[in-house]
Image (cartoon, rainbow, N blue to C red; front, top):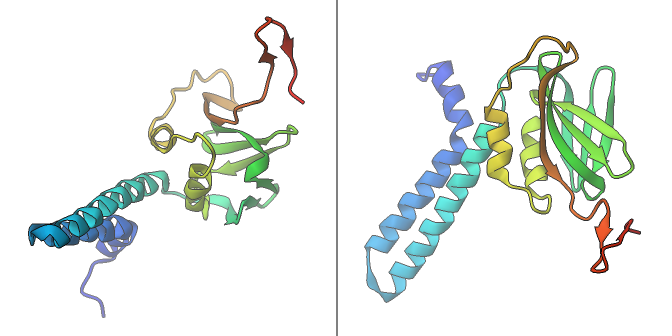
Amino acid sequence: MSFIRPELRSALGRWREVIAAGAVVLLGGWIAAQGGFFLLPIGGAILLFGLGWALYAFRRLRFRQEGEAPGIVRVTEAQIAYMGPRVGGFVGLPDLAELRLLTLRGRRVWRLRQGDGQTLFIPVEAEGAEALFDAFAALPGMDTAALVAALGTTATSDGRNLALDGADRLIWARRGSGVVVHEAGRGSYPS
């Protein structure tokens, strides 16, 4: 028999990484408060590590979306796999060219486009989708604050387009694709 209510247990489970990082911050502060030439730098380093971990954990917490959507997401090494009831596929992180957040038929989905044009749509609330944060954070030039902020906003729909509700946000695009302009002013396509 548990003395903790199920709602509180669920909330503590969601916040466990942030709580653990907060404990590391407190430990680092306590060690630094002991003073001295030896303990002050060690405590300061532990404190800074805890603050960085707390920020990262809080962003991961905000990335996780409540709700249920069909399909399962798996991230292994440098590959994202989505297995849905009707569609699915795989995308390698080195092959990823663009990441967008769309709203299709009232459901928010990630649109992952490879360099060859193939796309993979993954519902934001799919099982295991929280693992996408670490995969997306590993992309070169990814701004994780912008990634989390895009999930926190909702776009208004004009109601005229039934398939796309007007929310189409470019989150990340790989640099180096497109036309390259030389100093002479002529453009050429990258090889």
